[in-house]
Length: 330
Ligand code: UDP
Image 1: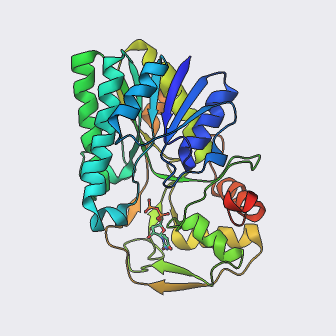
Image 2: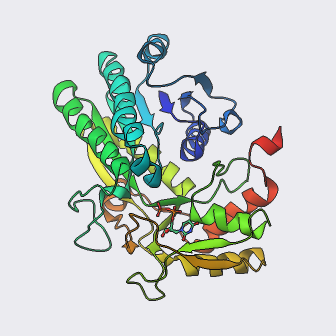
């Protein structure tokens, strides 16, 4: 089965490509390399450097290959940036997806997996957050993913394209054999920042607020291993053979505070990891924990790396061996 992976040179996309190839899929990756790394793309994948905003380029890819499925990761993904540059999100993320969907529909593709987000749930009525929770996007980023989810609704009704929206909580960790991992410049995510402190690349971690309504005052998040996410994508792609669209939340159902993550990283790295408490980061909810029961029951998804030590160990293995990310390997 041949699939197109947009953003396949990025953090989550590259881990999904790796697992797809391991499981026998034929993979074409399109990525503009603004944030991705060509070194992260599995050598057996066909790599196309291109931007989804370039509609002609997207069309060429569909003319050159017959895809049975699309996995769409290519996107601006930073909540904070989306407040400062909303059009990167409300326009570019949405137009990129529209170009992709138009070509997918014109070429008869019937399966589409969307990399969506927990940022759809800014005001949850219940924690853990079930797939049926009401949608309240927390930023232009979350809104852009919701706008794409709505496009998918119409793709199904008009073209019979089945889709699966996977709303991730906090993706983290790295491939257990250490050949790919997380490499963002600049880095904004908690676990890699903590590990940069452990490596001496940063002086300290600034904890964004300790006056949240949580036991130790710092925000609670549900960290999910990138390989478990990758596995969920492939299960979803296979399940869409029945033509039914679905939406799933993906997390481990267990939350850890920022302080708990730091403490665990201290144990695993053996480093002190200096912290200071700073101001809150706008838009951070107190507590985000996923209820992933639906994907477990419907698709038999069972996370393998579902403990915080396992997540931090694989991330540490990557960061320790690649302190300057992919660039340091050249
Ligand atoms: N965080 C922090 N300091 C940092 C980066 C993140 O205290 O330098 C906190 C952030 O406020 C949130 C948690 O760590 O509560 C996870 O943040 P991240 O950016 O990794 O993921 P998000 O929850 O925004 O998807």
